[in-house]
Image (cartoon, rainbow, N blue to C red; front, side):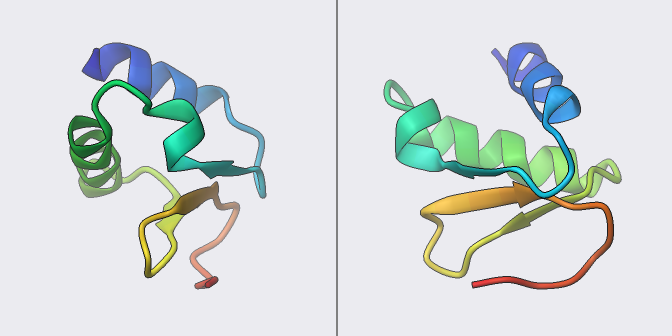
Length: 64
């Protein structure tokens, strides 16, 4: 599943915003860990402070 999540992140367009509950219906906690892992490996993803959505970044600006 992690490989599928990473493929999804890689294929996202810069600036694309996705709601976690829409993409991670079966296991949101595992999906959140995949997001953390992806970021730790250098992926450009920003997660909202409430963990409801995330955005693929072309830079490292924060969003809420």
